[in-house]
Length: 462
Ligand code: ARG
Image (cartoon, rainbow, N blue to C red; front, side, top):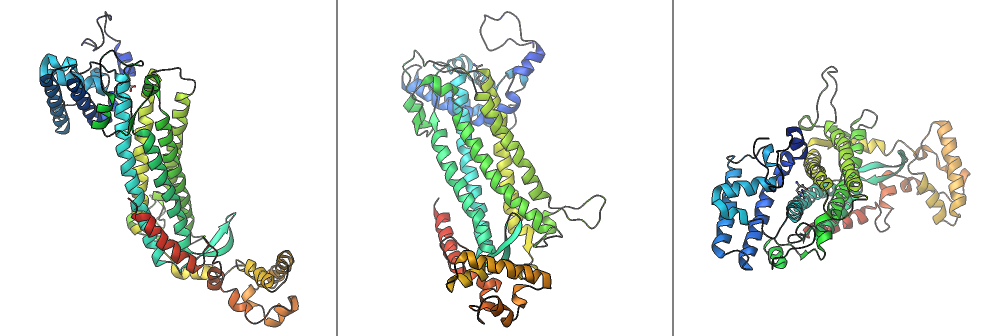
């Protein structure tokens, strides 16, 4: 390294080039540059406001920082590895622009409270963007659900056909997961949005700073009460990564279903050309790459959560350079969640079609109405457990005879139990099986219609 370091004269020789590269975070923390500038502008204003520097100096710093921002946006300022990190890079360029007064910017702060401030400002923005994307995602789910209240689809437990459900009900399950994701991020936001600025290196500062002043300028809700905690806390990042991981869990579950539905074995959907890819060797293939990638990318977000937990475990107070390792995982998780939400929203909106004919057949070709036969008897006074056993036998003999329940003659029903009457046939049609589950939160059409209204109301909350 040719140039001398930004740190003190205590150092006699320059860093070994490989160590400089090892130490540097500029290749990734450049992502924070605009937040770094905004944070520094607030700090400069506070220094002037409290009389630590003059108003002219404060203004020179503020405007110089704005110039750094513009130069960066126009591609004229591209700091390299010699800058070590984004904080040094901005300060150095500022000093080139405004001269010696630039050297006053770092009065009464440390890179430790600075980087904590930047990361929170970044995450705050990203959380709001992801929450908006969740809203778009939820909107698409409700849009499709509204058109498919009466579309029936086999419902599964253990991946075995269990009872048919309304397709809308199925999609609304994912709507509710996304709703909790949206609420969870709001909660995480409240702990991200606390200012560590002014905590200094670890113990506060000798200058008469005003931490609430900078917090207000930066729209933080509060300030960290303890300086050691303020500079070394990464709970907020762990919480975010946890919320991000849960979003990915939800997206990966629907992804898996879409992959199954698109298979020849299910044939519940067709993938449209705009969202599917071909094989380089098998000309007949159309692959569900989008949901497969979402399912696959879920792993990396979990990995970042795990990494952050391990980085923090056993870390003594206060700042340790280990904390520089927080950023790539946060950035990658943010980018991954955003990309997955966007891709899944497009996929659902325009990339697949439900095969209504096939779904209608699917719900009639099995014994998914067996519970309803048991319920039929139970409603006519037969204790449920007894009814359950009777129907078990019916299913067994039907399978042996190669028949479905709807194919049994009335005499056959009545041989099984005298309580059966002609209305058994209506009771076991897939439509009736679904309609009858009218308990709160169930798949009955009345419930689903109400759930759709409730979903629209939930969506109207900004
Ligand atoms: N690049 C550093 C980080 O990301 C900035 C803080 C450096 N602080 C220090 N005491 N070396 O954590």
